[in-house]
Length: 118
Figure 1 (cartoon, rainbow, N blue to C red):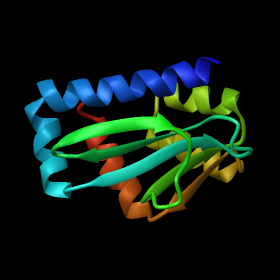
Figure 2 (cartoon, rainbow, N blue to C red):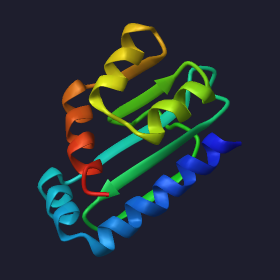
Figure 3 (cartoon, rainbow, N blue to C red):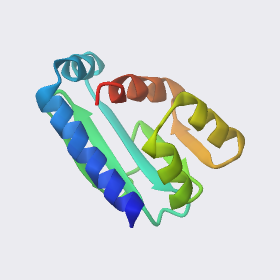
Figure 4 (cartoon, helix red, strand yellow):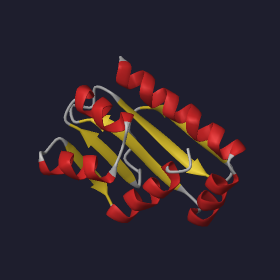
């Protein structure tokens, strides 16, 4: 339940950053579009975000046309990493088979550069 709430709040924070933070808006305009999602490996908890300069939408589920997916072994691991996300935590999680990135790693870099401005 906590992970569902955190992912829902992340959607609100992204929408708020688009409205209030010019640096976030500029970076997103340069990218044009980024569609990404977060899920547990068993897909019991999943949420996706479609981001463009025109707006950000977020909903439950995990469509197949996403640019990037972050898959976590379980909800506890996801919460631990997403509360204070750092590149090192993601790398450690990937080495321990707790985190899996589905998609292009360049999209992960683009996402990290955007999330710095939340």
